[in-house]
Image (tube, one colour):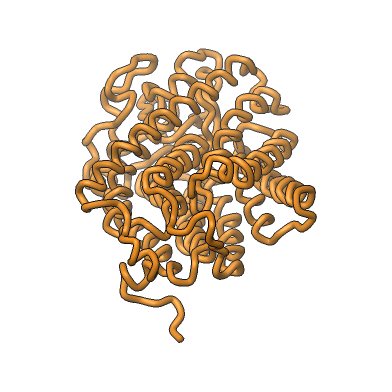
Amino acid sequence: MTTFILRRGQPGCASCPARGARTLGLAAILPGASFSALAADAPAVLNSGDTSWLLVSSVLVLMMLVPGLTLFYGGMARTKNVLSLFTQCFAIAGVIGLLWTVYGYSLAFGDTTGMQAGTVNLHSFIGGFGKLMLHGVGRDSLTGTIPESLFAMFQLTFACITPAIIAGAFAERMKFSSVLLFSALWTTFCYIPLAHMAWSGPGGLLFDWGILEFAGGTVVHINAGVAGLVAALALGPRKGYPQTAMPPHNLVFTLAGAALLWVGWFGFNVGSAVAANDKAGMATLTTQIAASTGILGWLLAEWIRSGKPSALGAASGALAGLVGITPACGFVGPSGALVIGFVAALSCFFAIGALKRRLGYDDSFDAFGLHGVGGIVGSILTGVFAPLAMGGFEELALASQLWIQVKSVLFTVAYCAMATWVLLKITGLLTAGLRVSAEQEQIGLDQTEHSERAYNP
């Protein structure tokens, strides 16, 4: 069986005939949409170049979780909790890998039966069960010009890292059993529906709205960031916060993790073109530019505020720029990437340095401050700079596209916040409370949850 599926890389929506006609012949829109007409006009043939790049991209995105995010968060933890962060990231990857195989891929991308462009129904929000246990994903099935098995693997890496991002918000105080159950529930009821709505093609709610979402501004970063904020509020602050100093135990770990995330981000962003083509080339350039200006923006803000730019600030600035450019990287030009990276860094710096302190919530490692805020800024600015992209998408009307982006951001924030709150309540009931005891928190999660130490005396 051969499956033909539209790819990321060009904007397209059923409500925009000009854009739809333009992208139809290129077969390059967003991943996941069944497009049987393409088979009759231009039968898909496996492309070894596209396949090679997606193989590399899948490995790069996996590297972002283990070891990238694991080191980034582990270094910011206190000595008594560093192994708990490592264990959570590894275990989340295992749980979501299983979940994705059993039903996740089918619900997000694999079964688009019942989807109708411009019609809002159940399948606008979630897919079907036609590909449970990856049924039909064989050696000869294709997604565009790559094996469908590789497409499923690439999307699996996205599904794994997204709930792991949330772990940075509730770090050092949530039970391990609660982490695993919440991650499974959240992926099922938050990540999979949003991925389907934005990326599954005509008939998906956000897709039909016309959202520009190249690599995960709403689906990954806003989704995970808002969930992190809700989790931090639901659990309450760590014991002693903010009166007790809780400095990172190993900033070298954190910077090494940030470096791995930076390199892996090219798989995340550029791989989302699902081809080795001109869109991938521009996404490579815009991703690097945004990371560079993000570093400069953050360091400049630190320099002005305290007179001393920091190593952690440089790493945070790079990640803020990368988060900001994620939804835009295939739609904007170099000048747009420069502005997005800089503005995202300043916005995240303000959220972490001022807003968090003023409101008093304990987002341990700033999952909301970096991913939530950076994703919101990047998604909105995509609507500003995509219509202005030189040689890009000038046919887009700036005002209408900006409203589409804002509307999509508001929907994502509202849906994720409400769903996350309910899922945390359910998790707490099923695991007899979300938090470890005060005594266990004082001793540290490494010993109380895993009977291990990161460093033996």
